[in-house]
Amino acid sequence: MIDPDDHVPTTRQCRMLDVPRSTVYYRPKPAPDEDLTLMARIDRIHLDWPFLGSRRIAGMLRDDGLQVNRKRVQRLMRTMGITALYPKPSTTIAAPGHKIYPYLLRDIVIDHPGQVWATDITYLPMAHGFLYLAAIVDWYSRKVLAWRVSNTMDQQFCLDALTEALEIYGAPEIFNSDQGSQFTATDFIGVLTDQGVAISMDGRGRWRDNVVVERLWRSVKYEEVYLHAYEDGRQARDGLAAYFRFYNSRRRHQSLDRATPDEVYYQHQPLPQAA
Image 1 (cartoon, rainbow, N blue to C red):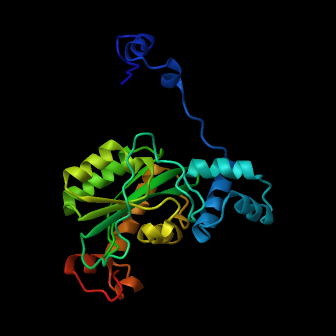
Image 2 (cartoon, one colour; image 1 turned 90 degrees about the vertical axis):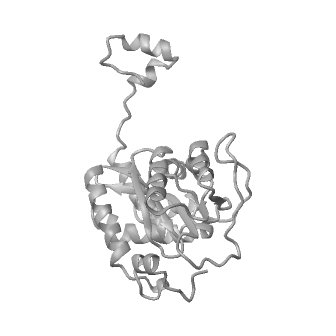
């Protein structure tokens, strides 16, 4: 909205739009290399033991010879957007005014493509910095329908992934996500309700409610991200694009009776344990 090259001075543009000048002139500082190293290690620990909280993660880091206190681990975990995953009381809401929808997948049989889609966001370490990855997954076939990366945890990259998936594959019957503010935002919910999609949301801390996407993150990180220290966003996008093509068309899944996601999605093969 603020155009520094416009003939109207930036100061006046800020006054007209009621925007603080400090917001316009602020330039975020890159995370220190030491923080990036810790975040990459925290990411691996969280992926392997998602039930560990900041206290126990700090202890494991100290066991590895890294001098770090719990407060620093808590700060980095907030930056990464991760928390310990275990059942806990729902004492907070995703964002003020955002509606939370009930979990709809309990005790239902998921037996065909397009019945349930799921989404989530994960942290991606790079050689110098980090990104966030959002993906839309067909629950039955495990096919990755669309994905986006971003350097901020905003709503737009999630909305872009959802819009692409709907344009290419049509609307699912049920869409499942966690209670993150990106997925409870009015614009995101509006796209789903306009398509007549039933909205389902995980319970707080209930990682098993969206286990299909959690398993995808493990595959993406151990089979692609951790093997390639991406230098920048372009390299990350190219690497992920190649991996998701492989994941959909060539990677065979034991849970899919050794079929690929594309084979199950397009041929609708019956699966013995699709529920």
